[in-house]
Amino acid sequence: MPEPTTAPIDRLREIMVRLRDPDGGCAWDVAQTFETIAPYTIEEAYEVADAIARGDMAELKDELGDLLLQVVFHARIAEQNGLFDFDAVATAIADKMERRHPHIFGDHAAGGHHLWEQIKAEERAAKADDSALAGVALGLPALLRAEKLQKRAARVGFDWPDPSGAHAKINEEIAEVEAATGPAVAEEIGDLLFAVVNWARHLGVDPETALRAANAKFDRRFRAMERRADGAFPGLSLDEKEGLWQRVKAAE
Image 1 (cartoon, rainbow, N blue to C red):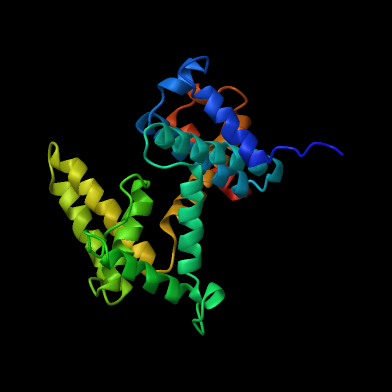
Image 2: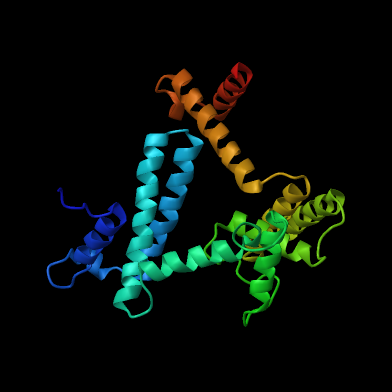
């Protein structure tokens, strides 16, 4: 009878144990901390999203593996510091999923997103930080965090009643940018971006998705300009580059 094989997740955890072993492990892996690994965790999450956006399922499989490695890495660091281990992480999320789906795993008659948000709000209220903004992670991309902060504030009634108020705020912030000088310019630009996110939210547009689409469009059109210029693009005048841009736009 063949010997049972090690489950893939257990194999991955064993690999991380060896890599983090101070006696014979990988020097780079041993030296890492939560803080040094966090940027890689964020990067891997974005690479998962990129694979999905490109519809590359083979790449998605690889990127999900890279993201899972980040979870295993953080859990191993925590275990070595006597904080928690991978099993505790898995147990915590399993408990949370059951707790937030009482209509599936409990005796609640109905569920859905509204119930999920209600339970999340009750969990926040039970914590020391009971602000409506509690739990909006500092490490989120600024655009996404702005939207989440605004949605949280809106739930407790701090919001424009319709898009016109958000639109007017943009005009106000533009005027403040134009009037600002020195370091205040950066602050006012931040306020303007925050106001644009607010207007997008009121129009039912996901600002992160919208900006990703705009980035992709710019990338596509710019590369098309370069191809049309056939290697001469850097030396063209601004007017010539603008002409190329307009021709590329018209060709789409």
